[in-house]
Image (cartoon, rainbow over all chains, first blue to last red; front, side, top):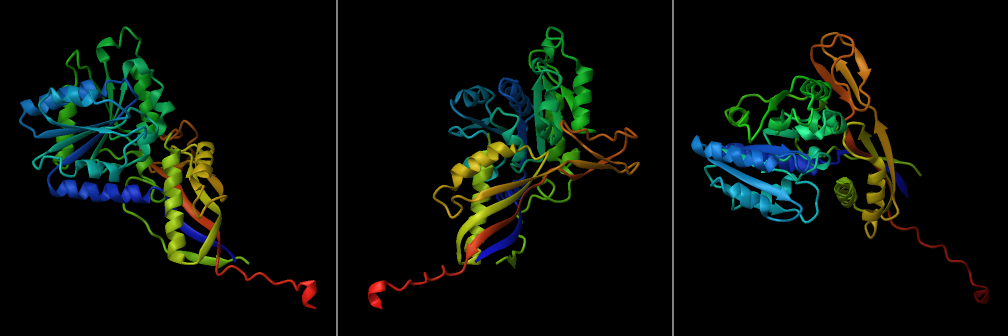
Length: 251
Length: 131
């Protein structure tokens, strides 16, 4: 007999459930997760390397997990800061998922870690859909990428708690229009902070660490409009849903 | 392209639901709601779904995708609008205040059509020699 069955389940319920569990487990041990998203080449690793060094100078226990499709180059760069670093190779998968991340943290994450930075796979499409249990989601774009990047990748920028512009030391050379960039960010994520940074120009590095520490201290992060939908798939209710199955016989 | 991961998640959940139901023999179709702002490309998802269903209870099942348009509401002036793509999430009327997203982030399995119950016993045609 052919039956029409209403399931009414969020497709990403399992990931959202795993993210919810991980967030709670990390909170219980005093660790705050910061999820870094950007395109390849926007300067995530260089910025993170400096954030880790700065955190160590300030005696903040930090760790970093970096995900790539291939090579362990990023971990080698990040390890120069002296922080605990782990490389995850996704073997072609374009994003991290919460359950996968939890397995990689098991037995590795140092007990006293205050801030855990996760450098997601360089990609602004796929990682945007996956909650990793982060408290702070930071989306980066370099000045070379064009002012319309937030409009081209609205889900990524729309769900950010903080937007970071990198490589501002070359902004003038590439005619970066900061006003237009900010207006485009505002269109998809009203009210989110845009932080200008440069590793070479030593701009904004301390502020980014301050924002991460504020989140660790319990400061309420920005609430993106895109995360405010009360049903369907949002990041505001990251628990697994198992709605009751109702069956209607059709024939 | 994460549509393959999404397709696998859909298949997993439908298989689990079928297992809970107990006697499902085949899945004919899966109805999916995909919001305009869900970050999923329906065509890529259909392609991945067809490939990923091979060898499962869902082999040959149709994926019926309903696109849900993004809609927002301004808390300040109560104006409602279609957000469009790229989305405009600031109020086009009063420019200010706080916006609520009413729809557009859905990525939900609405339901399925499946076959269940014991397979009907084939009705035996009398063979001429038996008469």
